[in-house]
Length: 171
Figure 1 (cartoon, helix red, strand yellow):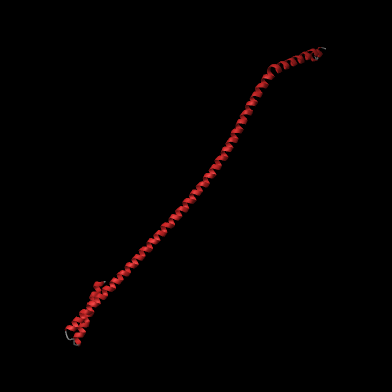
Figure 2 (tube, one colour):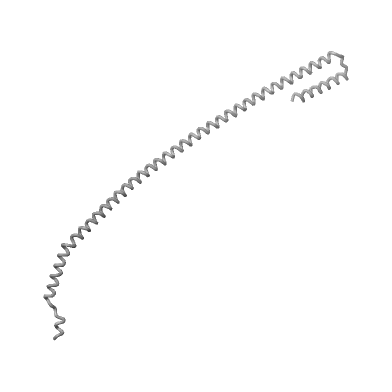
């Protein structure tokens, strides 16, 4: 029967082990659980504060981003206005310059036409004076001598030659 002693259950040993376990649990709870619980609570509070700071920094960053985008859009609109105004001003200046150039060109053309008319009138006057001179010279020659048919023909030919020579010089 010796084999039964080895397998037997000792109630007193089980009871003592349970009491030791309970005492150990109470000691650990009193001296270890509460300080560890305090440390965990402090770490949780610190994490919560860091999350709050991160959330507030994030919301501030979002508001700054929104303000930046608003300012950027305002700057873009202002730049577009400036460009549009500059374009309109440049177009007006361009139109004024072109109009001035047209007026100046018209004035130059009018002056040239007036000068051409004056030159034409002067040339006509010179031609008339030459015709008068030639006519008076011819009349003098006719009056100074008696003309026969051959003389008349020679006189007309010389008159025509003189007119041709005068035209060469008048041009």
